[in-house]
Length: 134
Image (cartoon, rainbow, N blue to C red; front, side):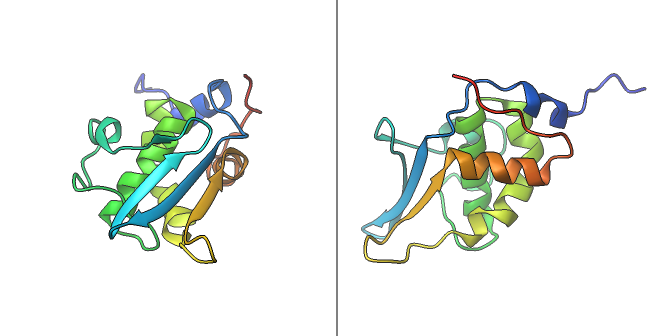
């Protein structure tokens, strides 16, 4: 026994996530911007860069590169507020969600809800995800 717990087991215990939160991504002057709609705060890479440095120049989406990896980590870190969960699951989250995001439609942005994040975590994690409690 290595003494290291499986980070996936911590997904069940998270209580800070808000399933009603909405993240919105769009481009301003060619730069990728992501906002947390509930408080109009811009999501930045700084906190996620402390855990893994994929793209210090910023976020991206719509493919499987370093910018999308940084965004996937930042989204999970912000949503769950759990470094272990974010680090354990962001690569699969990038593949399943961030690489598929597109700024299409009349508003030119994508939207990702807390419920969609919960559903994806439920799919990619062996343990079931407990409902968010606020």
